[in-house]
Image (cartoon, rainbow, N blue to C red; front, side, top):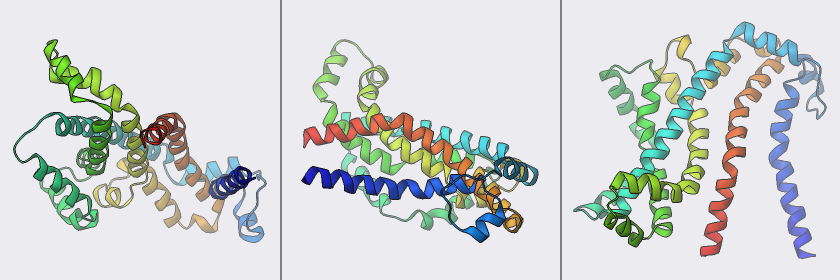
Length: 272
């Protein structure tokens, strides 16, 4: 009886979480008049093609999608790799100031990113990366939160005796990292990569400040400019269609990486 109530409650939470996404998808198929006058509906409409035509006629949604995808993939891959490499260094090597340096990482985790935003913009201006996608990719590689998480993860999954044995066999540090440490850290890296991808994909403030040309606009900027064109009064369905398109990559990434997330949670449950 208790388990039935728990499952029922969890199912209720799932429904609550899914309904907003479902409404966005449904409104993407409805015309603006029905959305304005009829309110929320759970039944698809017949204006999907018309909404898409309005969308592509007013903004270059495909180019915005590709720009966002390029930035998000680059940030996710580079951040995951170099964060894993940094965590490996903290775990394996003993060097002077190691604890102080890791303490600084913990301190910087507590500092709001908005405080460093003006310095970030000024630096990008000085090195000539304004209106360049690299200005959104390079700084994001240094992910303090990912390093902190992976350092704790590798400490519990990779014993130093394994590393010492590999060294005795003549393996170099990069070989050990790529062939031993990185595969063991894969679930942790995948877990953090989900949040890194979502954060980069939805990044609007930095992109709005750094990018100025239409050719470099990301998808959140494109959707924002679509609303600024007052197309809302013509057909709200086109706006919802833009939102629906922006959700698709996040769902795809979560589906493919969710097994690693589940493995990570299960491993933590067993160790606990």
